[in-house]
Image 1 (cartoon, rainbow, N blue to C red):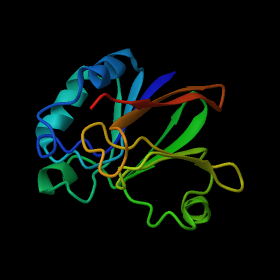
Image 2 (image 1 turned 30 degrees about the vertical axis):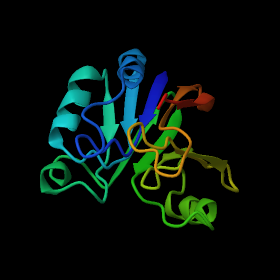
Image 3 (image 1 turned 135 degrees about the vertical axis):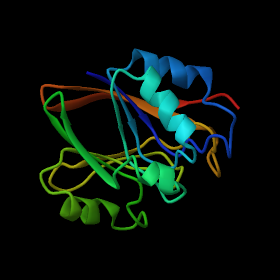
Image 4 (image 1 turned 90 degrees about the horizontal axis):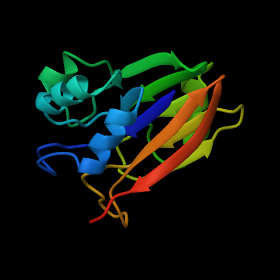
Length: 165
């Protein structure tokens, strides 16, 4: 199962649209995961229309229209991988331990908020992924998104994709 991971798109606050490369990844994915901060319901509508399947949550910058349509935490099983999605996980220090306690029985946690790509494994095996932001790089050298393959209960081929400036 091919998965595209997005977070912190902030459209139209930070960009008018997602980069063409991101839309191509969405089209190629079996599932698109968005870890919050859409900013507009129009971005949710567009991703729903262009995704084979969309799993998303609201973020701290998402107002009532998005909060009415999205959960704070989403859970699913994809390719035998137990997945949770949330926007905020708190400070980087202690993140793995905190998240492993908060999400027992989960294999993969996708999160956003910081705009900083993250890929780590907590004691006990929980994989934590933050795809960064495809539109607002903040202090990072590039805007980013991630792709991965989930199959047979394994998380494979995790790639961070830097986008041209």
